[in-house]
Length: 255
Length: 265
Ligand SMILES: Nc1ncnc2c1ncn2[C@@H]1O[C@H](COP(=O)(O)OP(=O)(O)OP(=O)(O)O)[C@@H](O)[C@H]1O
Ligand SMILES: [Mg+2]
Image 1 (cartoon, rainbow over the protein chains, first blue to last red):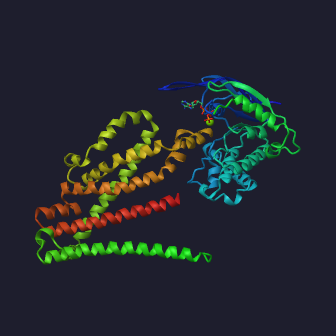
Image 2: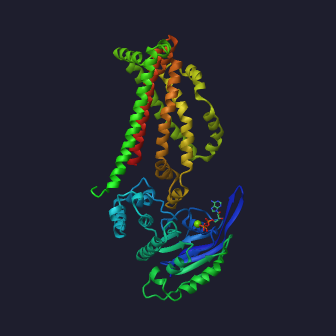
Image 3: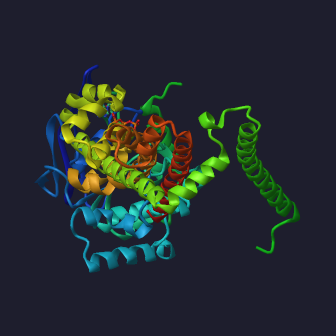
């Protein structure tokens, strides 16, 4: 398999007037084409920082990132980023929200608009395309946010706790749905999450980070025996608990 | 709408009655005010020469309308006020954009803006009069000065508090600063800009009246100062009442435009 993302000795230090924060220290890992990889770690350890560096909206203090073998310098058309909240603009209709990435990249052609409309149609938002975000449910909004990310046709998706603003039921359903969409569209995905169960259920590999300055504590290859490959079905696999407990111990949460 | 329950209908009726009661009381209060004023003047509890009275005000309005001067002066005041608050809001917004664009400029100008904001701008009236001359332009500059500083501060603060994550979202698509301004910062703050337009109606009117006091050529401010000088209190009271009505109409119009705009957005 080919490597699509390579991190080489990434370190990141934030400087503020109050002092400096060593967020990330010497992190290296590779992501392969079509993989679904989760990153888990204590809160504030630098997970979002890593995604921002991969997305090219932040420069690491040292180290380098390669996307499809090319050094990252600024944002790349190959990478899509989904943030924690949907951040749909309430003054734009859903379709206008979905094409904002294309607009920013000056790629809003007739055919691109049509493709986006087809995506909305396919993923159940067709009849809502002229609605405003406030008229949609939380799950539908998250789907609209995904379509906004997919509209610029990136191969690699970065998902930063994309479901954490949703209630538990919706969250299970939408994470299943989005997982299926990503597999169907053959995307590579890097998911940051606090939810160990979600990580185990949906990932091919899980990267566990330590406390700040964070480095890699362990990388787990997840192999679940389930007859139907989907996050909810995989939760029933016999190995599920085993991975869950191992990662839980590694995160070493004290309350 | 057929399945509205009886309780709900009764609730709606109750609300309507309450609204009507408030409106009737408001009207009554106004009538009472003019009524007592009139009676007090007729019974000589107050001196109508100094305090004027509603019938005299009415007569003044009639005579002023006959020679057309009522419309002239009201028109001048309205015109100057509209130019004042529209240009104050636009220019203020443009300057706020500049401050948002360059944090350095914003930091440098910060103390000056704070002082300018605290300074009563009417104190600058005589200076403007000398520099620009006794024309309508002076009055508009006065109105502009009063509204612009508050606009800059309010709109700039609104820009600064624009959701960082929405900006981050656009950055993930590689947005330039101009795109961030046009696609997030400005549209997200349309309500803030329109609400400063509303505040500026009142502020700009203060500037216009002070300006007309000083320039003394036309407008309701001129009528008020002129009436005071020749001791025609009927004229003063009439002008003040018309000013109050004019101010109310302008405020309501802008509030209406605000409602339309926020819906349209
Ligand atoms: N712009 C910044 N300036 C200064 N420090 C920052 C900045 N952004 C993040 N940090 C600090 O760097 C550390 C890592 O932040 P980051 O947001 O990457 O962590 P995270 O793992 O995503 O946290 P969470 O689990 O809360 O989402 C935190 O301690 C944070 O306070
Ligand atoms: Mg984070």
